[in-house]
Length: 148
Image (tube, rainbow, N blue to C red; front, top):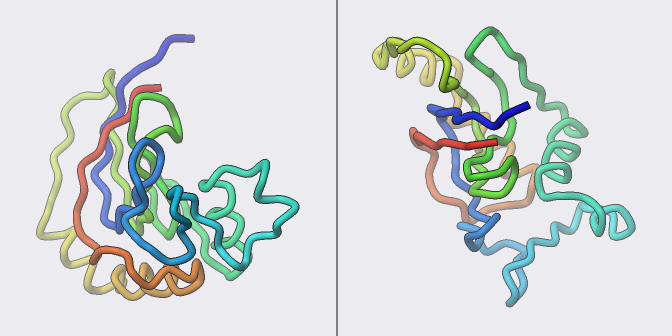
């Protein structure tokens, strides 16, 4: 199986990490390691940040669903060369296009309508609160890519 490029249009909050320092400072030590107080000390040693975040979000009731190229709900998407090597974005919406897909039209007016109607900002704020992160950047649109 070969590797291919994937592009993601996300609405969410970049968390930093991977090759970059976290964009938040809650529970981050001087080495840039995030150790959330809700993580089980015995389990987090062998868990990735993605696994910790996913488990915490599911434990407090967040979920996500896939529908073709769209993923809705609170979850995490990574950019970078290899899966989970780059910058994680805590997101409420994801639209993905693979290298072998045809071009995809994006209705930004409809996405903005959905963002407001479905309260993506509120959902992201609640997810950040569940993760005990209070210093993250404001939510916004992000275009990221991965290869893996």
